[in-house]
Length: 91
Image (cartoon, rainbow, N blue to C red; front, top):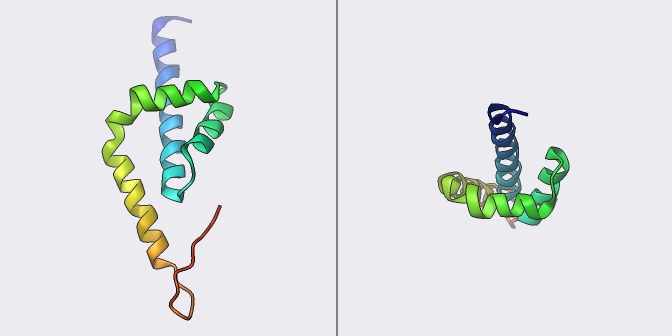
């Protein structure tokens, strides 16, 4: 493959990794589960996804991470049963 194709593939894989990781953060799931899902989807290893997220991508997505955490908290707080008790939704 040429350099341009490699760059395009990396950016597509990064987008997939970011999308899946933010989804898991929003749902209150573990990042390890996100890395496992992403690794399977892009044909990589869990450790490679973890490294890519933590060392390269994470710093550029702090705002999106904070928004995902806020959405998770808002979702948990808005789900209540008839007696008014908070009901946690589990995956």
